[in-house]
Image (cartoon, rainbow, N blue to C red; front, side, top):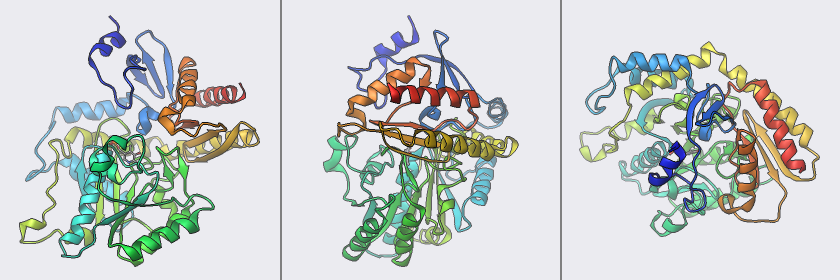
Amino acid sequence: MTLSERDRNLIWHPYTQMLLEPESIGIVRGEKEFLYDEQGKRYIDAIASWWVNIHGHSHPYIAEKVHEQMNKLEQVIFAGFTHSPAVELAERLLKLLPEKQKKVFFSDNGSTAVEVAIKMALQFYANQGVKRNTIVSFTNAYHGDTFGAMSVSGRSIFTKPFNQYLFDVKFIEPPTAGNEEKSLRQLEEIIQKHRVAAFIFEPLIQGSSGMLMHTPEGLNRLLRLCHCCSVLTIGDEVMTGFGRTGKMWATDYLDEKPDIYCLSKGLTGGVMPLGVTTCTQSIYDKFLSPDKHKTLYHGHSFTANPIACTVALASLDLFEKENTMEKVKRIEKRHAEFAKELKNNKKIKDIRHRGVIIAIELQEDCEETSYINPMRDKIYNFFISRGIILRPLGNIIYMNPPYCISEESLDYIYDNITQFINN
Ligand SMILES: *Cc1c(COP(=O)(O)O)cnc(C)c1O
């Protein structure tokens, strides 16, 4: 039996309607931007395996570092104990992040990094006896699939069966080009009416909502308002972090910086699960007390796993060793050229790009959201048959590739996108 057949009998896959899509492609090997299935067919991983992979698959330097660490220390409880990979990673991350970020809290993935950020923000006020309990978010935000993360995400097909169990969040429209004024007014109104503790946002690019892009100035104005009104700002850089937008952090495009950062996905170069929530000294200080009620009671069995931290360190090494940000610049330039080429195509409603991300929104009548839009499967299958992994969000084709992707692979993907559009 093939992997696909054995899988089908046993495994329930994420984001998959198992009745309609029971077949999973069995991948046996990865190298650079390529994945190989059990029949030997090659695929270009144009979405970096769900936006995580940076340096390419099975990078030998990362493998070597993992092997070394495996022989030293594989796991240790992180309450009451610490270890070199975690300490070094905290040091290096804080050096890369804006100066005001002073403390690092580890968890396992993007959703948990968000959960921790929400708890930090709410308890920051609770510990001071200040009644502020409202959280503000963007209408179509995506911050993860656990209950807290779902609560601060836009209500959608993902959250529908659970909406009654999600806590109340006030939503504002994102500051996309032309919508900045409206977005700001909505935030002002909410801050006047409610006791707002925090505003959580995906900076500049909202991934799951279709690579929706904000203007930096629009976002700056929202953050400035929050900072004036003592509303904590949570920058969810889970997707945008580690170079995706052309700079190390999307917030590098902004003058105003968030008080809390959530990192995951590219944190380990997309190799191991790991999440990090960082905060300013003044947030951390409000948890310091002889009163144990003020402790942040949150943790996971694998918090700051030494292997995961080692991989994150190896990934940061590679940023220097391989001039990774230069690769990002190269892709950004290619995307810009491609966008120009397609600009006046009548089948395209909008084309936008920043960093390694390009999104091509196709004209269509169907208003359905991403996962139930019939166009989605048509696009997905077209590219899979040509050995390209692209998972469109409804009528939006996007690329978010590993930064090591070759010119040939970029050409091949652009060609196929053009062919699909003109068909
Ligand atoms: C993917 C994502 C998350 C959730 O991360 P997981 O590791 O999938 O739990 C949170 N926020 C953003 C912006 C994301 O793109």
